[in-house]
Image (cartoon, rainbow, N blue to C red):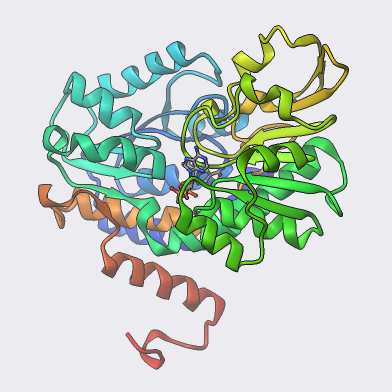
Length: 391
Ligand SMILES: NC(=O)c1ccc[n+]([C@@H]2O[C@H](COP(=O)([O-])OP(=O)(O)OC[C@H]3O[C@@H](n4cnc5c(N)ncnc54)[C@H](O)[C@@H]3O)[C@@H](O)[C@H]2O)c1
């Protein structure tokens, strides 16, 4: 019986087309691509596509999201995978340094770790690469002068914003909440911290699941947008105190901390969907003198009983909730196929020197966005050939 990795491989149809092309064109022949990215079935499809393009691929995972079967599958197919799943940030740094020790020509970064480490101790003849996330872009922007290479930010593609960040993260955070807790959403009060593309998707999906959703965002424009989208935008303290479920998805640090314990409603569930686990200060909350005892349930649920009798639950210790817990499947295959098609095309543009150092930490070039959008639409509507649509 074929397994899930094969199912995903069969359904990442854009990548399948690109891999077939790359086997002929070999854009990465003789090059090493280094990456630190969530290692799961969809990234397997991407890394194998890069391998098919002639690259030697050296990969490690991200904090806490590496899946052992994905690692084994990659290793069997010639990808060098460094390390294993870890929540230990120091150990993870060591794995990233090992990736850089392979002297990559191109980096596929996810959160800015690899480019930042490379900048501090440059290795090899790095041409440039890609950065997947919002958080990574924010981290790399101030470093442009020392990076001084083409770095295309996948997250800044409008396709990634609406297809993955909004629609797919929204769906998968809802799916993950149900999978973790098996608890009702109907009539529950949900507070979403952050109303960027991800937060908007989360809010809309919980609204669609009959929850009463409030939004907290430090940007008044985003609060206005949330208000006009029909969400409540109460003051922070009120939004925390009223919530049955609070999810952070801001890209910032310490959005919820031990200071907030007095506000929390009995039986509230806390989760984070932002890239870094620092959005919920799990260490400070768990170690607070207000916590009388902790019960840990299987599948990554921690229930903290406070001295006044209230109980609060934290999912996955504040790690990205849609990539953690029981049988985490993450975002939909198609949304990731779109994002990874952008990745493959951007890495190809870097390898073939179609972009130069003037494109350091910039969005995906428009021609690549259009190419990927047309390719997806062609798969959905095979009879409507590009010539029949406006270019
Ligand atoms: N879980 C996933 O699968 C997944 C997928 C893609 C991105 N992400 C991550 O999700 C996070 C959000 O991504 P995005 O694209 O929506 O980012 P974004 O920058 O578009 O939106 C973040 C929003 O959070 C708000 N914000 C920042 N600090 C805040 C604070 N202290 N209180 C309230 N609001 C605050 C900002 O004003 C902004 O509107 C990032 O860390 C990103 O890397 C997660």
